[in-house]
Amino acid sequence: MPLYFIKLTHAADQCPSANTKVRETVIKGMPEIPRLVEKLGMKFVTGPLALVTEHESFAVVEADRVEVVQEFLMLSGLMQWNVARVSPTKPLQDVLKEDLQRMPPPLY
Image (tube, rainbow, N blue to C red; front, top):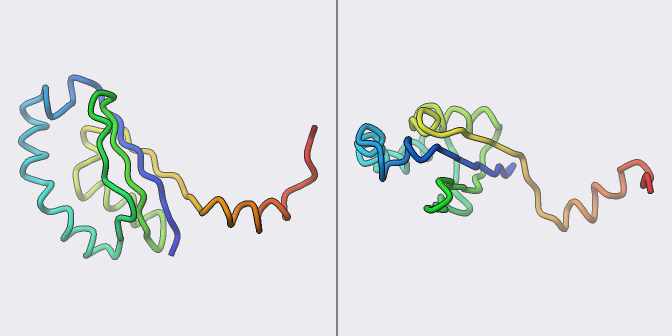
């Protein structure tokens, strides 16, 4: 199943530590995350992990399609107070073994 890297970033004034409405939303919504992940057929591989002092968090998830990850971010409300970046990923050994062979010749 494809792997996706999710990076969430928010401004300090949107942090649950500083914003009452965001804090209430997080406390109410976070217990629903496992059920939503299961419903969408996603799986957390790593995380979610918070880089607390940097106002960022990240996770690596498995999902059939990127649209599933986007649906998760929307339904969970995470995109309401974060900038969400979703990037497809693959194991480095696969890139070195398979993809590097298919790339055009090096430029330099």
